[in-house]
Length: 353
Image (cartoon, rainbow, N blue to C red):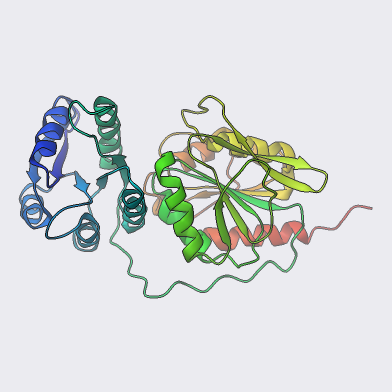
């Protein structure tokens, strides 16, 4: 018999605690071992029950969810799934929660009669089960951002970087972009994330990263010093024109179970850039990106996978490695320098007459 996932629910609404307890308890793989109305009560409940996963509301009295999450990840690292309101403030707070180490999030259901309540519950069940197997580590306290890396000495005007990520990707993408030089090669990124949160994600990265970070728009030309994030619920691909590369935004069906899909991005990069591109696949559940990164490698691109030791979920990088798509596996801290080294190597190649 499979081990039950033991869950504590933290939410200031008595109604929401009862609804979530009833809904989640119907899943045979989940056991609700406790609930709490605020972080002060939750501290004792968590200490008494030692749960596998905590669901955590953001807006609560006496101590907000972000402050409590920071304490959890500092003193007692435990997989946390945030339950946040679908507002701009909720989106900003959710991005911050993911940076603090929350494994994932769901939009807060409006109640048992609310629109899409069962869909939210089904999503929460899936994410709780995934979170139970996630690797969480104590929160790193960084007083000042690290200095940016040096720009590649040789930068081919046709070279760029493509990155794909899912669960755990928010803090990984942040760590990579924070050390990129302001004039870094163009970077295109697909991160699995709901459309309500992506604008906050891009805005947050733009504030804290040396390069400019923006949501990709159809026809936007790839430029040095700019990072392009796939927009919500649409695929990002790259096309080649006479004067350079441009973003393509595609309203197309799900690929590898996702929209935006990392596979869509990587396959397009393999087709139009070949050996001029550098690819990286980071922490995430599932296999999205494995086929695309393999296509990039077959086309001559240098490809990097995040090492299991630093992943929250070693799913996408493992699938890409097993498919033969990874040239080099590295821990997170070594990935940004390797991407820039590979770009420099492309620019330093002898030109054919």
